[in-house]
Amino acid sequence: MRQAILFVANLKTSSAVQGAEPMPGRVEAKCGGTEMVLLRGYGHVYDPNAGPGDCAEACLLSDDQFTDVMSTFPGRLREGCEAEIRSQLERVREVMVQAEQQRAQQASRAQSHQALGHVIQHVGRFLSCAAQLEFDWVAEHAPTEAAGALAVFYLFPGRLRALAESARRKARQGDDAPLRRLADAADHLADQLMRLDEASEDKICPQLLQNDDYDVRDLADAISIAQRLELASQTALAISKKRGGPLRQLTRLQVVIWLADLVERHGGTFTHNPYERLRYDGSPQTLAGQFVLKFLRTCSPSITPQTVSSMMAAAIRYRNRAGRSEMRSF
Image (cartoon, rainbow, N blue to C red; front, side, top):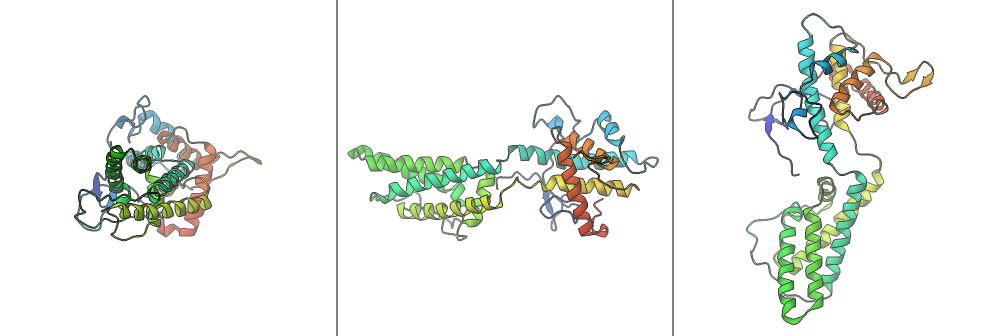
């Protein structure tokens, strides 16, 4: 939801995995029929000593990296084609590096489940406190336009804080403990919503009633929206727990598919074998597998051979189902 889109680009289309990025091509800002892509740092030289997120870690392969990656390239290197291959690898690397950086900042499924549980807990506390008293509170600023479901994350916290401030002010006049508890509960719920991670927001939002009635004019509105939020959070948590497993890595799979296209475009065969003779090793044994492993490690040094093997097997299955005619990305 809170994504910074730096370019609107018309990109070369690819029939790759649904939900993954199309093959990165030359970026041309145009109107109509556009895709959105984040392009940060393209043109900077890779620096292995740069810290996480540094722009020097962006896109270009060093000479040593390119030589190492190409040492296992399973295609035919025609005269003059290396510059083209290097350019294509750097465009793919740009997508992969950015995706890995974004993935490192995302909450895990367990962390998201914990955050959803905290939302449910704080909403329940707020509703419990609100049900125990009559408080004639009206928002100071009336809404000027209809607010949709997303207002739960950007507008509702501010209304809760205004409610808390008013409740504390009135509590001080008569030493009213229930009002103080309501104020504390409203503030804690606002805090939780403000620091909620994007993955959890994306789980909650589809479960909210999708209408334009999410502004808060009085305490009754705040209670009504909190009730919707409680139900949506409970539903989102239940659905997410049923799905289980690690978060999907569609960009990684898409990158392997692009590398397979590159190999075959240059006359090679994209094959995979995780066995060393008759012993299952779990790491890529073919030239294509070594090529993919070396390249992916320039993007994410911590990636394991076993992870690359799983991605290669998945990419080959997908390409076999999709058909070669649909898989051209360059």
